[in-house]
Amino acid sequence: MWRSIASNALSLLIVVLLLCGGVILWGKGQYTTAGPLDQAICLRVETGSNMRRVSDELANQGAITNGRIFLAGADYEDKASKLKAGSYLITDGSSMQQIVDQITTSGRSTCGTEVNYRIGILSAELQVRELDPATNRYVEVLAHDPAEGEAPAEYAEVAAQSDVRYRVTLAEGVTSWQVVDALKSAEFLTGEVSNLPAEGSLAPDSYELTRGADRAELIARMELAQAELIAELWPARAEGLPLANEQEALILASIIEKETGVSSEREQVSSVFINRLNQGIRLQTDPTVIYGITNGQGSLGRGLRQSELRRETPYNTYVIDALPPTPIANPGRASIEAALNPANTDFIFFVADGTGGHAFAKTLAEHNRNVAEWRKIEAERANQ
Image (cartoon, rainbow, N blue to C red):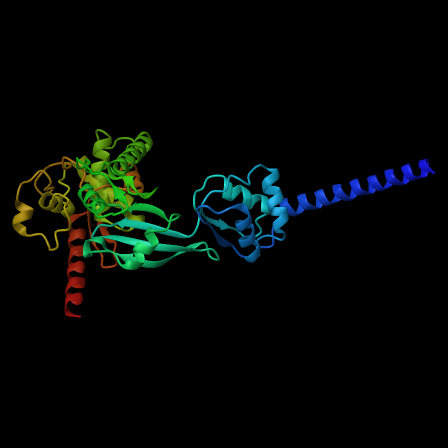
């Protein structure tokens, strides 16, 4: 009898163990396999939240199938106490394990609200954007020019959120003075910039940072990025260029940056200036003359006068025989690459063609025809 009871108990225990093992395997499968999301969502984890609240939110949004398994998995991996506040893009099909990893690892927000301070050629703009999880694209919800006065109340509400991400974006061709002047108006930055960075020394790019970041440290990041970029590109330059060093490459790149906004013709514009330097022909480019007048402190706001084209300054390339002494703006990668690897052409002239690009010429006669055509286009536009 006792032997029969023992046998039955052992059998029952085996069944229970098998069932437990099956449940564990099933739970593990639920935790590691693709989840039910068919469209990405943005999960916001508040400061002071916990894994149970996150589990409930994920369940409400249809991102997980079982909150208990989610919690058990996070606890088993010893991640339940490592939750980090932020806004996280949870992509479609994310497993519970992937979600736990995402919200406990870096704490870096990947969706939600972003403040992007764009410093452009003519103005700076503070943009507030929201990431649309469905399209993974940012949607602008607010734009404000700090130079026009106090930011709207909506911005103050956004700035008060702890998980808002900040970035500063420099357009290609901005001057160092424009950058420093614009950064002074960025209320989310701190500290002072004691010295104006050398022209051409800042890399046009997008710089992610946190609220309260130091302005001088941000400038240092921009300088380091540009120094690393020119150090990377200089060794790969074409042979025989009339450029003595990296600084001269930056000078030429800045002129190219200011002469054309059409990416496909940068190498051709570069070839014109390289050909002129090789043949001892003056560069005769308006942007350098303008820089000599404004010192990079904003736009000229009018056309150049004949007296200004004749006046001898270090930046008047209608008068001086070579490159100006410094860059006239901060060039981006594409213009630096064009300066170091120009197209192989015989062009020594170019003029606007009315489409936003330029008409190039090898001879003065051909150039004069292009100029006449451009004057005709200008006259037609003036009469419209």
